Image (cartoon, rainbow, N blue to C red):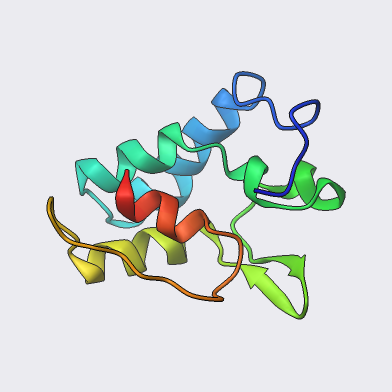
Length: 107
């Protein structure tokens, strides 16, 4: 995770997370309760550099350094849905960015 605890405070951004899930994900057809719950619970702002923390819940990819981006929230939800990860499955994700996708998958 990138952000310092001083800036990364999940309580402060709780409503933004809820809006992200309701307006960007559920309203576009993602109904999987595990994915919605994960994205509602995991503070996305903790996975982006402080320089982009105010944009953490916008529906767009954000730069995270080294020519990498954190995928837009809907794309994370869509990829999670397509992967159909179930209890007992193992996740092995290497060099793909911030770790947010992995956090959603293992929630």
